[in-house]
Image 1 (cartoon, rainbow, N blue to C red):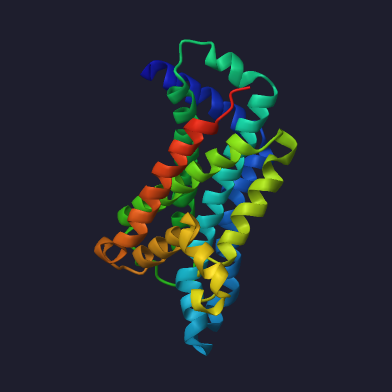
Image 2: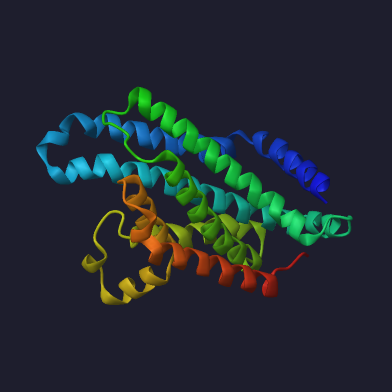
Length: 248
């Protein structure tokens, strides 16, 4: 089974890198946003404490969330295209189990997320205007946990979206508004009460809170609520996907 898993993962990786636009959106866009915003705002950090916080914490977390959203959107699009083209149906007829097929896609997205994070950190050490003092091991684990949880939400969307043509627009309409009310750009108490409730039910909010805290050097013990919420979201979304996922 593991041989089939690695072979399928390698095939999916080769298919992915053959699409330059998707590769650029996954790796290039977060890196460019991270560097351009950091370089343009960094020299003015002394003007306001809020700007300092934005450059030191918000920009790195925003770049990482864009990485995660790119992975989720790509996953939703690929699953929808494969279903519509009959590829999932043919894969299901192979000796590979459904869990192996889906796990290969998730593993590839997590690997690309970790790779992009590595590029982000390397570029940041060379070009970023502030010191990067985060615990990189803890932050990487937090990012992988956040990505896994949001990918599970992506599977629910992929299970419900009607056709491949609607996959990316539907994913964007769901994920990006959740980022807007996640507390990354403004405190949660600044939005309407109804949106505060939506935000607290969203894995994006808890992912942002966890990433901000770990990036700022806070211990995991201060973020048990976020960790629990992300794990619970993964469990619920995985169970729901198993119920409603369509192979054809």
